[in-house]
Amino acid sequence: MNKIFTINRQIKPFNKKITIEGDKSISIRWALLASQANGKSIAYNLLRSEDVMSTIKCLRKLGIKIKLTKSHCVIHGNGLNGYNYKKKLTLDAGNSGTLGRLILGLLTHSRSKIKIIGDNSLSKRDFKRVTEPLKKFGVNFTMKSNTLPITIEGTKNPKPIKYFEKRGSAQCKSAIMFAALNTKGKTVIKAKKSRDHTELFFKFLKIPIKVTKKINYDLIEINGKKNFKPINYRIPSDISSSSFFIIITILSNNSKLTIKNVNINPSRTGILKILRLMNVKITFKNFKTYKGEKVADIIIKSQSKINAINCPPNLNSAAIDEFLLIFLVAAKANGVSYFKNLSELNEKESPRLKWGAKILNEIGIKNIVTKDSIKIYGNPNLKVTKKIIIKNFLKDHRVFMASVVAGLCFGGKWKIADKDAINTSFPTFLNKVKYLSS
Image (cartoon, rainbow, N blue to C red; front, side, top):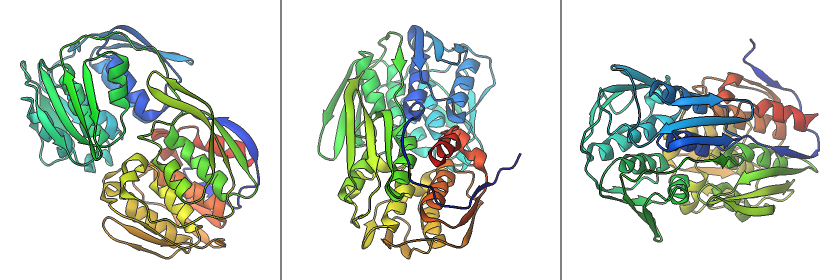
């Protein structure tokens, strides 16, 4: 199978409507929480990516009965601490940092040792941000460094904790919240602001939770050992996946796109806020609130005049997965854009800040990059004519897809390796590209 994706021309003008698959963050959280619920949970529009399938495989190895059909997924939860598994169990998180970190929170009560492994990319990522707070519950970890593989040994009597989460890591915060589910007493988290899907799930499920929102952080209080009902859910479309097509539309000529039923949770829509600061017009239609999550159709048009931006760092967390795309918009802006406090980008599947700079260099855009910032000198008349090869990016799905966006919008002749990287989060990405290009 040819794993090289080739682009030989810019995308032509289009006016279309598309639907994107289910939100990855919500799909994984739904499955994990459904495994702890009492009874049968059903989800529609569950994302069928490798990360979500890794979640399903891990839960099955933990003794959870799961049925997947073309239209929906059924998970039969056994209640809190209801996993039933063999000794010397190994769980493979694949490429999913969300799965690898969050499932540790659900294993704090495990009665025997469980080994967590991942692929080469995930095995390079930091897990100390999760193991350090979980140790405070009384959990033991065995690991050679701060990365996978990790062996977790739970405790019979986990103790509630107080923890200050300073990174703005939703995965760290959620792992602690999951651990609190099986812990009697009140767990308190002072958390730097990050995506809040887990909090919204807890509120919807009536799990005892209190969230006090401050200017720079949220104070989260959870009373554990409270059983909760099954979770029937129609998962909205993923804003991160939608963002690739939002940017294609903005940077294309005379084009318009409607994306249906997208999750526009404010903790995830930093990219939309940043784009509006750059003079990009974005419209919402059919707005509604669904089980705590904000959902709407997004309407976007081509943008002829894009302003440079000195990006407010307080928007970073809500746009952390979309900065490679934002850099491409800055490449076409009128002026110099500056983004800072982005060290977290280099803690992803690949060092994304470095890759953002590399793609900009390839398309002829001057930039100055440090360990946590980038300055981009925009060119509103940017047009690429040379040959470009993108490879050796650790099969990072977002680097692949951002490179496709650049090739479609700026021109040139592109060869982009490892097109199967999209299976991590967005298996139908290239099908959607083909539809817009037809």
